[in-house]
Each structure stands twice: as C-alpha cells, then as structure tokens.
Length: 399
Image (cartoon, rainbow, N blue to C red; front, side):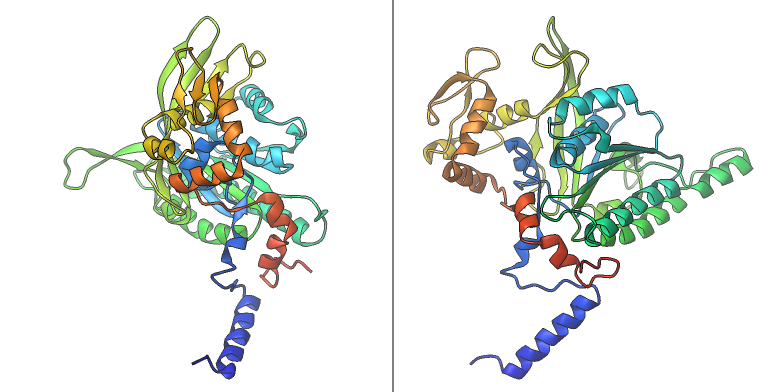
C-alpha cells in the first residue's frame, strides 16, 4: 500500500520550511552530492583518510610533541589542497615562532606553476579571541563574496585555513596572570571559549568550500586513579567533538647522507568520522636532496605510497590474488617492481601513476582498502553543490 498523497505533500512542505530555517533536507540517494573536495592524488593519503578527496566543510587536527613536524605537514596540506586549486590559504600563527623564510621555501616546493604564493596569507595573533576573530572574519568575507555573485562561478573557489596552534591563552587569562603576577593552573576560559566558538564556526563552514587544519600539542596527564600517565591534547573536549579527523604526527628518525637530509615520519589516525580509524602511513620530510632545488623543504608522500603498497598494513595477498597489484621493493635502492602491472625497477611514482591511469584497477584497489569515492572539486562546482546547499541559509544568500 502506498503512502497517501496528503502525507507526501505535508512532508514536502515541512522539508521546505526546514530548509528556509537553515536545514538542508535531501534524500538518502542524493546525499552524497553534498560531500567532496580536491582530489588527493596520493594513495597513502587516500588510505589514511578513507577518502579519495580532501573533504571540505571539515575540521582536521594534527597533534604531536614539539618539533615532530606537524606544522610542516599542515603547511604542505594547505598548499596542495588549497593554493594548488586556485584557493586562498590563511595561516593563523598563535605561537609567533613561524620562520617566514622556511615557510616560503616549503610552499615554493609544493606549489604548482599555475598557483601563486600571493594567495598565502599569514595572520600573527597573541590570544585566543584574536585568532577566532581572524578566522571568522575570513569566513564571512569569503561567503559574502562567493554567495553574493562576486566570483566567476565557472571555476572553482575555496578557502583553506591552518590554526597553529590550538594551545593559545585567552585575553582574560593573560590579564589575570599579569594582575596576579603569576600563572594559575586553570584553563576554563580557553575550554569554554573554544566550545562556543567551534559551535558557531562549524555552522559557518557547513556547505561552503573551505576547511580548517588545527595543530595541537601532545601532553601527558595523570592517568585515572593516579597511577601512570596518559596521552592527551589541549583545547578542551570541544575540538574532539567538532573535528572530523584527528591525527598523531611523530618523527621516528632523522637521516643524513652525502646527498640527502630527511626525517622519517608516521601519521596515525586517532579519529576518523568518515571511515576506519587506527590507520598509519610513513611519509618523510626532506630538507636536502639532489632531486629538488637547494634550500627547499618537501613532504615526501611518494615514500608513504611506496611503504603502503609494499608493506604489511594492506591485504597484499588479496590484492595479488585478485590481479590488482603486488608491489615489492626491488634490489636496487629506492626502486620498486610490480609483476601484475608489468613494471620492473621503477620509481614508486610510475607504479602509482599506472594505477591511477586505469579506472577499473583503481576502483578495485579502493574497494579493498575501504576508500570511499566522493565527488571531486570540479564535479561539485559544476553541479552547483555549494549554491544549492547554501540557498535560503542565513547569511548564505546565493541568488
């Protein structure tokens, strides 16, 4: 028996009223059109995120000990998935210790010829409130421009932001410390400030082509019961609630040879709202190499791809049995072979390029690794996703 027409009509009218109030109501079969972003282009990152794209309207957190490379990773991701897609990149420095020369060298290594470093903006702040104000003002200006018909909608347009870092004190804490002449062991103002801010911030981000990467410091706290210590991060519980991804960044070793200076890294998933957690990849940060200009800095995701495809974290036997790939490290250092792909003693980039060039093989690999395929940025833009989603939303008038 079908649903009475009166019920269907009432439900449709209710949905329209909800949309005008700011809600987005779509069918289950149509909901995937509201998710997507710039294509990642690295199998290791796809595996880590369980996604083929860098998802927009999303908060990412990188945490780790001091000097582990989390800021370097954040800058690289901002460059690759914002600037390289013609977007603006905002770097909010709350620690006031960013080395502009190193920053410029790193961005110039990852940026494509079609992009410009003029789109990379730096805001130095000294307190939590100013950092929040800078980010919200950029979102407001971005949305007013995007949804106010002030941009060419025939091309992609997005905003990427990095907050470095979450552990910044509030004005009230600073004023109290100055007045007392000493610091108190209390962070209630910061936790409350971030909780209120994030609830507003994520609402402004929703269904807009933007993302935030926040860095945080790993701290040790006394374990429940008073015995031993446990790992934790600062900023209160609000960040853990609102972020979609949380990654632990670790520097495992530093290597130096006559031709190369590099640091081996691990990035481990602590939270993934869009797929499986507890995944790990192994990129490197290269400070000197014959393959890149002098004094540049590179986050080497190709090494992470190599260790993923030739390592034990994926079902290699299954991939080989199904004729997808069977990548192995060759006897020649830094080269790889794959009998199924017909490649012998080649750089890992040739193997991944071969996989990406064959849609059926790529689809099969993604299915085995639990990688969800979302719409890329161009597809989202062409179908008017941002404008459909923001239509009738407060402060998001598109027509």
